[in-house]
Length: 64
Image 1 (cartoon, one colour):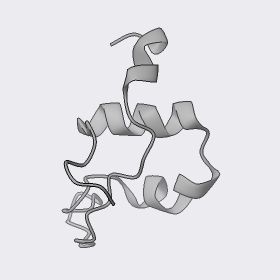
Image 2 (cartoon, helix red, strand yellow; image 1 turned 30 degrees about the horizontal axis):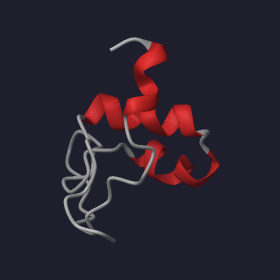
Image 3 (tube, rainbow, N blue to C red; image 1 turned 180 degrees about the vertical axis):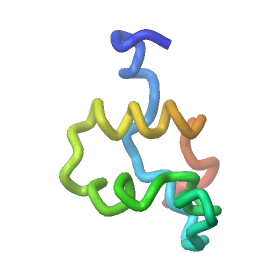
Image 4 (cartoon, rainbow, N blue to C red; image 1 turned 60 degrees about the vertical axis):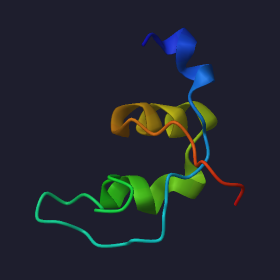
């Protein structure tokens, strides 16, 4: 996916409230790193979309 197509990736948080960090430093629930989780509220929309693209997040099925 190119940078121009990042706009089709959601910028919403992939958190599913299963916050357990594994030995690789990723959350088992959302697959973000500690740095990504900690910096989420400061990230631009494109940076959030890039994280969601990396983890394969396509959005939540239900309304939150």
